[in-house]
Image: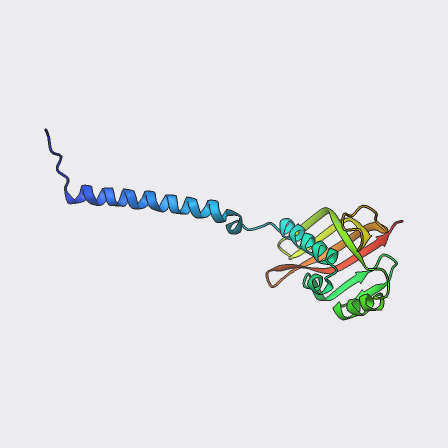
Amino acid sequence: MKILALDKSDTLMNTRCWSMTGCILLVTFILSAHGSELIAQSGEESIRAVREASNAALKALDEEANFQFLTDDVLITTGNGTLLSGKDELKAYIESASGAEPMYWIRTPGEIIVNEERGLAWETGVWHGYSADDPDEENPIVQGKYAAQWIFKSGEWKIQSQLFVMLN
């Protein structure tokens, strides 16, 4: 029987090898568990995510939650052509319709073009307005096309302006 003698350099090499293997396995585990959080979203993906969150807030009839996605000086042209300037004017407009049947709007993007260098984006799509009693989005009351300008401020995409045109 032959006994293999290891010197200090062999032991050090073994330790380094196992340490490196352990590090690789740890990084692989972290990336697989949290990979989606570590990979930055593109501007378009971020805007689509904000639009989805905005739609969810509107469907829940939570205007305050929806306001977080707008700049303070947002410009909105409603489906009937009323121009609203700023969040305060938008709030007053919503409050003036408080006696009407509660409704929510779903905006579905068709195209989003992002200029990352300027921090601006253009979105177009279709919108549908539903009664709050229609959570399955089966019978739109109003519908049309929209366009939105987005701005990248303080690390977030926000809606700077929106134009809605009612087409039914």
